[in-house]
Length: 246
Length: 376
Image 1: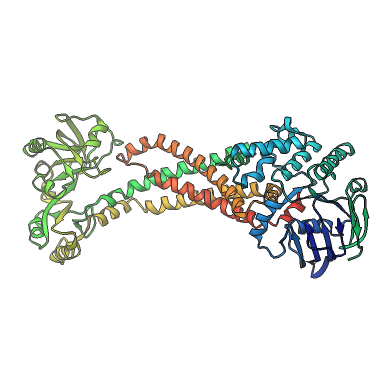
Image 2: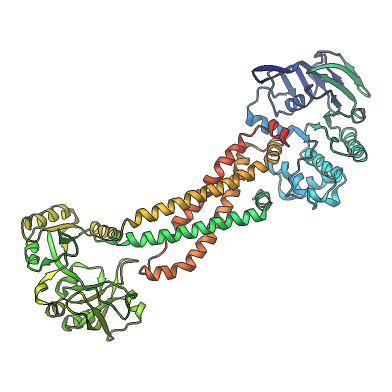
């Protein structure tokens, strides 16, 4: 269940309390997020929508441990990440977060297999174990037969599938998707969304996604709207949205 | 190692740039090695000079002579074990290009003083008995294909009208010091002194003094110079290494020149490689940000950048050294068989590799993932 009123119990997989993020630009403080609360459970699929500058990507960056908040706390699977050092956060990201970017961000000189293998090179898995994990991940995204292709030899949709395989290969706690279909045509976008839905439905992955596309957002269990850093409205499909303006 | 593939893949992403960078490294290292060999050749005499030997020259300069009579006075100074004397002969063998040092030596004392230059006893005895006898270093004999018994004509214009002096090669000396000088040609003092014009008879070029102990070098040198102070021929006595260094400096400050050129080569190489690495990192900001996002610690990012720089340096360096090794025998023969200081070049290659990758690597570690991803 997804809540934004800050009154959930401590069993939520992701718990955000009083999250603030302020940037200083041109001598002026710009408050991007203002006292945001959020609770997300295992296998929830939530979409964040809102106009440019509303704080969607900032929220995603904070949840992924790529940025630190000005105030408030983020707790994931019992670990409060807001006070972690940079190196601890890096380790934490490797274990808990799978990133899916709009521009895929694959390493062009590595094959699909090698790109997906990258997160596993940080683990103590043997070569054969790594191969098994990579083949499984590429199988899940339907690219088992393209594992030796380089990114330039793949279509945009296939590249995004490789990115998804890289995100899930180390079995992270949750996935963060930043405009995962933003660079794709409608057909490819549908395929990618079907795949993300499968990760949630079949593999019980928790997914938090930023999108501008209402069609894509509609595939999520819940859509949260961010406007100038504040959750102003919510829409639930399968889950129950509780609360409104934080 | 499991990151090898990743590092190599990144290296080969811009093949032309990689080849050019490795090429510049190879050329620079070749030049650096070449210069290092030349520098080594000039300082070799200093390095191998005997610690327990002094050289006495005319205070007015090396081209001025000293009376032979000084020998007995020097021998009387406390701390002096033996004294020998030399003159510069300056003959030409066949062609002026065939230069090699020719010294008029004192057969009675040469072996007592220059102990590292060894001649078999039978050959030495033949030489001592033969007025026109000569001894050549093993390297020199090899250079011209001389054998014991060969007649060697040297044309000379320094001592009277130009004439050809005939010598018989009675012996070949070897140097006990690895890389030590084996390029000299020795001839008999008596034959030389009898043949030269009377006005320059009984004058020697310099004395070489063997000491009882290297610890006495300062006091003995001072005593020698003091003994001949205010005479018609004052002396200047210094250790053999100081003499060798001063001799090399007569050709100009070669060492400074070579070090300057080497420094410029080294610095340029650092800039070229550093610039290449900086461009390479800048092009991959997004990829490095993704690596950091998915959990690669900063030290891994630094390691990747440094590894690439180091691989370029080592491949370029090895090619440069290979070229130098191919070219050095030619240089080495001309420089009396000196070995190239290859280890220094390898160390330079590694240092430049690490140094050139360090700044871009540190820049990559300081990269803020959020900012870098926004730029993609």
